[in-house]
Amino acid sequence: MKLPELGRLAFHFARTRWRLKFRNRSALEAWQARQIKRFLATQLPRTAFYSRFTGSTLAQLPVIDKSVMLANFAHMNDAGITLDEATSVALASEASRDFAPSLRGVTVGLSSGTQGPRGIFMASDQERSKWAGIMLARVLPPELLRHLLTGGPGGAPIRVAFFLRANSNLYTTLNSKRVDFRFYDLLHGLDVYLEQVQQHAPDILVAPARILGRLAELQLAGKIRLQPRRVIAVAEVLEPDDRQRIAQAFGGLVHQLYQCTEGFLGYTCEHGVMHLNEEFVHIEPEWLDQERKRFVPIVTDFTRTTQQVIRYRLNDILRVRDAPCTCGRVTMALEAIEGRCDDILWLPRSDNGDIGALYPDMLRHAVTTAPHALPDYRIEQHGLTLHIAVSGDAASAQQVLIHAITAVALRHGLQVPACAAMPFVDTDLHVKRRRIICRQRPSRQS
Ligand SMILES: [Zn+2]
Image (cartoon, rainbow, N blue to C red; front, side, top):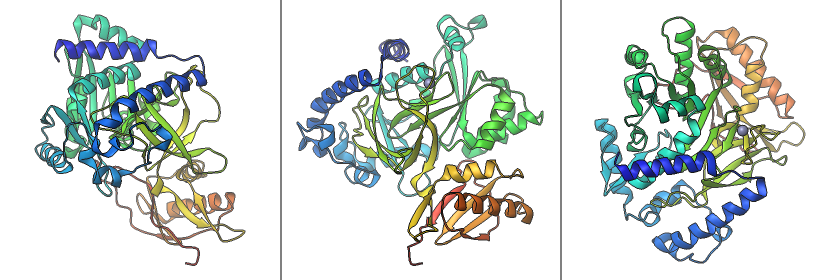
């Protein structure tokens, strides 16, 4: 990394870690409103899609989704990069597993989504070092920060092991004399790396939740030995059984990063609670329930300008935490990232037959608290029938799952669905695991 980039990284690290603190929620909101006003004033005139909205407030701008973003791609970035150009560069680097190339100085990456068109992430070199500063400020515990600033024993760097389905220039920005960042490519599976990662002996272990769960299993069985000082789950829902296993194997809290092509949206604080990263992104909740517990986030990233993310509706379900976090941050605290909107199952209500929602966390809770522990499972909704599968395909385990589904439906005033067993097929390691999916929503009449 060149000196100016390093300087930028250090600046954003310090600003994120020590400067951006707010007395209360309204102080944060007032500050955010000023940032957004300035951001919109400079950014709207810069691209063809938004220039017609110049002078508008955030609330006056259209809420967009992935299809709008992809259809107007070239008109929503200030490098004039077309969707075809970005896609071909990103696909070529995925095919070659060489994630270094960029396009006219802009790093391009694809989301690891498995359904529908994939999202595209773009960042300039400046934005990369800024991102790296913010990211390090969010994930480094104090002892590793001391290590970073003063050098570890013998000047050893902080070792970061990063298991993911695709690397990016964005992530390798972290690599430096002080940070030994290694990417473990899940396309090759996990087993091929077990020896290597133990030799690497990472201080920070970052991986999709299920991969961490698998590493935890191996550690608990005495087959590997890792002693990370921080464990961070990314890219998929952190299931309760994985969380418990990871905490047991590696000790301490399991942290999460909520980072996607649309921005760096959330992280776990030192008290173990997920917070929205509202010092850098603005998130409007689109409430899913009357109690205002669950929402779909509409994201405005006022920190990044190469690619404009303005009132972008994500397909995720976030659940608000009831109590404020004791760490003192005024940013919104989350109980969980529950999954995607198409992980919600829909069943007729017992009283009037209207279709009601069964949220994935309700099912997870029912499974976790079932009288018999369940192995890995899948639930797929096809109309009024739930197709269920249990690892090992044991009929007794299927019965436990059916009982859990029945209990949770009754508890939420929904009709008990018909369940049909299907064979269990484990998800490939390089594909996002989704245990609960709605394939086809029932209509009221069906
Ligand atoms: Zn907190």
